[in-house]
Length: 164
Image 1 (cartoon, rainbow, N blue to C red):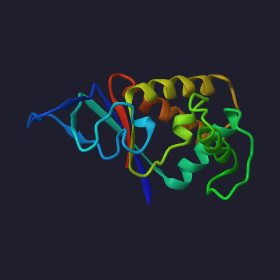
Image 2 (cartoon, rainbow, N blue to C red; image 1 turned 180 degrees about the vertical axis):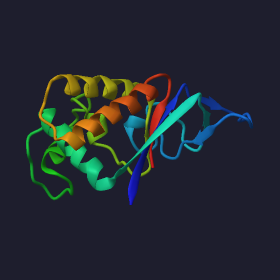
Image 3 (cartoon, rainbow, N blue to C red; image 1 turned 90 degrees about the vertical axis):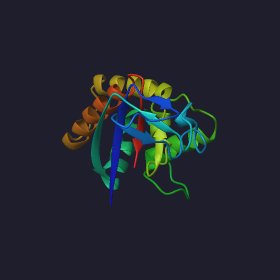
């Protein structure tokens, strides 16, 4: 199974969607995670533009673990499933550190959830810092990081990101 990550640009909540404009329904929003910011569950949003990327869950988990590692989260082993560094990031989140580097992206249920605009902007800033700091990533993860930056750049322009 794969993971699709879609960025929506200049999204707005609408009561009555215009039939000729693209629209998306929020499935999780802020009901299950703080990353949803002010997105309203079961509501329709129209948007100016969108782009999607597809990754395998394994590829995304590998990337997320590497991003956690280069963000400074130490290796940790617990009962929680996941990779060592991303587990440590989840623990920091659970302990109340919700502003750490990429904390909102690393500690995120990526199967059916959204990341709202404010969190997209913070995540984009974190991704750009990591990309510019010259950390060692393999070729595949460098390409994935560049693609994530493109996705979050679009979403930071008044939109949001949907994982599905």
